[in-house]
Length: 219
Image (cartoon, rainbow, N blue to C red; front, side, top):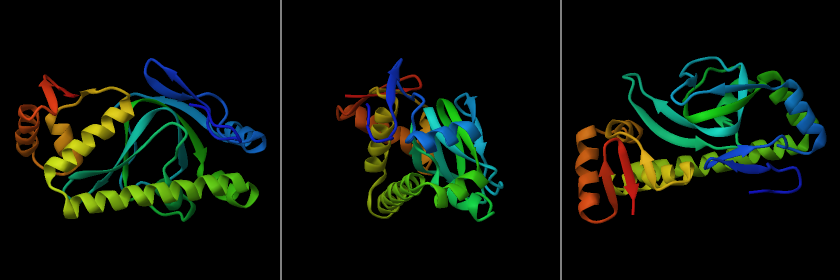
């Protein structure tokens, strides 16, 4: 996928989206790459922990990040995914206000992340209208996603939430064959593995999915 006017240029490599060089228009783009530090993180890496101070703002170049909320007992619930060309608005807000993180960010699939020093991310709001637009667009998108999470927890049954999560993962990985354990799904939905396994079996019997070891395939 390609967008003009300084928006991200995407290429597909081995089924994964990647950003190639151009995130923004020329002046901001040059500043982003001049000050940013590009790092590779394998799947499962925790790049931001709950209550940690924010030193840099991540922009995903390839792969993806899973953002979760953690309670005092260590239980987690999925809030949203960060995809190529996107950043974490929660990190940005905490960083510019010198606050600690209220979320945990985990690499969902092997990722290249451009880490922007938080002081730069803050001052660019005054210097680059395009950066301000980028931040506000992220804020709106994440707000809508968080409303969906609240709606799902409050009004949807677990089977509907589980099917929605599987469809999210299928879109994220660009495949209907999702490598995931029942425990991982349970953790992201803040429920028990037994409940997830029971519903997955019901879905398989109803012809929505097929199950194999550590894999769920949407039909």
